[in-house]
Image (tube, rainbow, N blue to C red; front, side, top):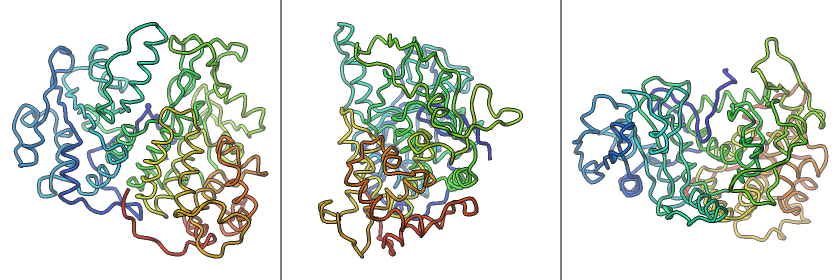
Length: 498
């Protein structure tokens, strides 16, 4: 397994278009005409044939014509963008015309989180590298070679950010654009060259970002004119723990959806966990004595986060640093997964995504997406911890309308689906919580104490006995079912969708 797969913000890696991917219990039902009609009404396709000519407006694809089976115009006649053409067909056409029913169902489920249009900008980036102006004009991300690497964003949070910056600089806020849920830009080159991943999973990952309105609090990771969301180098890797836990949440929930369709990545990352493999943490940090936040959009009270110095925190916490010869990556420290305390291991996006993707596989993808929708509404324009709020949302959903008080101070004999998220959080942090305080730190100490008490005092021992982890017992997929059974959940329930 290549553990050093770099992940640009809001991205997984790509290979040939729509490599076969296995859905398990998390698979939505096959698409029907209603799904395709919904996507035709929510996806707006813009085609940019000459991206460096930034004053030339993009072409808007005719969704009505697409629905009627007509393919005409420059986008469809161009021989340079076959991957982008296949993408459009896969999203909105019947299977007999190139449609991908699994993708259509999943895309429709995701878009219903916000139920707003999404802008997809398709770029012909094969003729020449994009100029700096083109990257700005088309909201594209550089793959390092001047091509349009897939990336996406939510419009409402971007509008809020722009308005805040304008107010703090005594400027008029720009016009809002949040009629849209979000936007995604991608070029043809990635479909032509491939980059070592699953294209279907990548598209799903990016689509989740268009729906996510959680606040990363970026300005708290701006220090001496540099972003430290992902460390000093601005990159993050599959096996890296990064400073900004809120960015980890955003990547984690997007990866959660991707892992439900990318069975190979799911296996690889689970093996990484099971083998107690290496987590990378960047060492090239600013001196701890430097606390100046000089970002033009920061208030005087937004001091830099102490998590910028994640490497220092791990050393103080006694995490076991190991040395590879040669080093896996220059400038990075290596730590064994299960030597990292729970509050720090959740800074890795795949610890989060494995936890929630296994919840989706065992409890239903629709349930997870309903939780995301509820969570998004609760998080929008609030400073709440997104990770703690999502656990609380999933647990509350598991009560099926009952109050939390109804399961406190009782030994409930029946199914306890409301505890499965908490049990999986314990499992995927390797049972490294030695105390209730350790366990609460997984959720930034912001999960209501009643939930922490309920799991830790009442059911932790049963869960850990059902799925043993020690020097001779490694994590295995069957453990997730064993945990569910230990909590009385012995039957699957048909997934009704979000």
